[in-house]
Length: 299
Image (cartoon, rainbow, N blue to C red; front, side, top):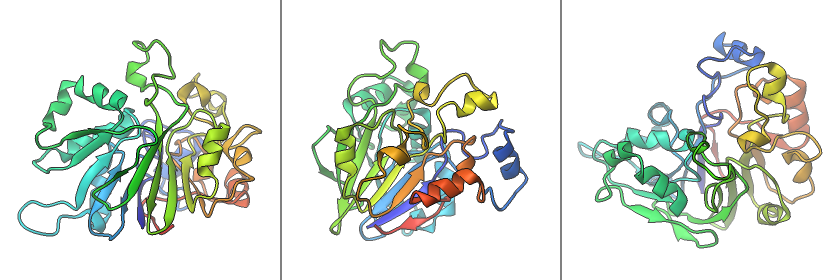
């Protein structure tokens, strides 16, 4: 199985377009210890020829340009991208769909909640169902993708997309608002969790024994953005459990058997994005990898 990390940063990328926090300033300056990153998305394939996108980042076009595996290869119009699987309706998960509007046929998978959200917005009519069929996925029900892998969705604690907060009765949203994915092929199991508000025993059980874990690394600490003075929102208010702390990801998953642990969806304020920081050292000492865009992982 091939896992291609197209983008590893959270919404806004690294550096975020309007951010001048210390880490972002280093990225703007071209510091090699702070390489720039695009917004979170991965591609998966069994044979390296036919690919499935998981989430469609706003940076999708630049990600395709940067990764030869996703270039057209035959005829006048072609793409090795056969389908797209969405783990939610957040802006940084769906905006890139509009990059795929120029006549290419592919299937679009999402929960009923996510697909209804998309269909309520007329701009996504640029992807007509006769060319881009919508396929509803459900927790616990596996399906096989164009990339040749078997995917089983599971429910996660999360949050409704930012643009729906005012209309939502609950910030957590209905079941299916936020999902994770178990991706299987070639005898390997990958767990993909780009956004997560809490780690319960059910999630721990799903993760235990995975060959590769790709997990929400948005913030290092819950009050990170408050302390920096860039936002009044904590990580939990945004629907993200933090890396550190007694209830953070590193502590809650420390005792599990996991082949490789990788943080993705890392916010522009997170000090682990900078090589040589104490936070990066602590994450690595706990067995976690902080990736850069373009890494290809084989579980």
